[in-house]
Length: 290
Ligand code: NYM
Ligand code: MG
Image (cartoon, protein in one colour):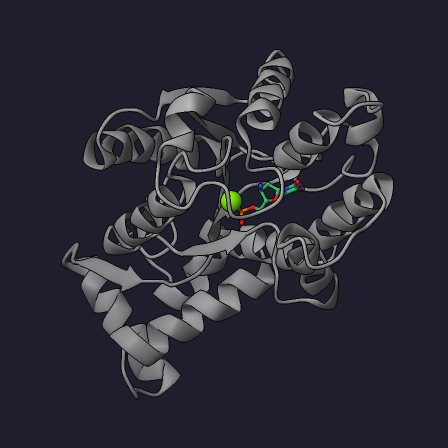
């Protein structure tokens, strides 16, 4: 009999195993973990780390001795028993999304969480370079075409996002499909429904943190006005469109006051995100707007 905390362990946390009666730790691990792959990784880890360099027979003897004396065997397993969370930050321009994404990334790392930070548009791909030229007003594109390029720029990273989530790595995303829909549908002649089509099926966020700030207040912040879309009338339309999107109760929207201090906002974000990570690890990865 082997007891463990693997039902609630998070990646990077120690898995605690306690041998109650007969059988070796390495044999019993398979009954705890279920899958053959997980077993080979963890029992391999047990041999390598805890029972370092001992032949299997000696390792089993050690484990049985530990069991006889009810010694707890602590194994630090860097394996992903649980999936990571997809955490999206959204808002109009200049609300502090990028600052908060970096603060969140650092805080989660310090807490020992496996985490990645990405942003959309990702200006480093071929599609992203075109988008960047468009935003910098160095290149003109048809409104429908550029909408589809923003969506394509997300699709080209879907498998990477999914792989990370499955490995137990949480992914923080600075803007996602909600920006795609809010910005394009703020232009005349576009409906929310048309704008959503191209992003249907990308990984569904476990939480969407909306950093809420009146566009007039955002406009007064440094750097506003350089890129395409950065004018008050357009940002107000975008803000309205985000509010429309927030009515969708199939998504976990959290609206946060972005006029508060960077530290206070960060504290709110980290507490929402910790709860999300704990909850999402037991749920399947969803598909957006499906
Ligand atoms: N933007 C961003 C869109 O119009 N559609 C999208 O799908 C995305 C992801 O690009 N003004 C707009 C919103 C921003 C601009 O974003 C660039 P950032 O975060 O300022 O680099
Ligand atoms: Mg911007």
